Image (cartoon, rainbow, N blue to C red):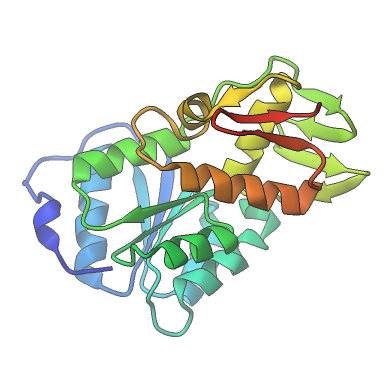
Length: 240
């Protein structure tokens, strides 16, 4: 991450708000951690910090945070490798992972999603915008009232975040699960890109079509190409 502190305010206010969710911040720059931690605590979040990937793995396994915010460039173990290791921990299957970094190139974002991240945020970003992104990530999207169902050969348990294809359980990142849950909630219905963005990423989050396409591609790699159909110029649907 860059060292631009001007985008994060540091007013001196007493923090007395109720704890909401646990967030683990991972960055090798102590001043960045301090600024992020201050602004998130001000919003009532319970925060933990780590200055490298190895320490992040230890803390995450112990506290099981709701969200992990990772830098990309770190010593000992970089953010991409850390993300892969975090995703292999079954205790963290319901934990969101997002990168917050000055690396904004397309290939870096694609690499982040390939590593299993649920989101990728570029700096600089203002605290108010960052908090909005975090709230959207932690907010569960509306899903089908049926908690468990088998949709054309894919078993999905929306309460336990479990997906099975041909009896084999898949370990899907949260965004991929929510995308699949949305599409299977009304099989055969065409979901526009706007509906997908609003339901999965939230109205307060600004992401592009490329983000949807990357997640669709990764879902197809895991469940097979036959399930999700592309409706050119419109969006996607599950099944025929």
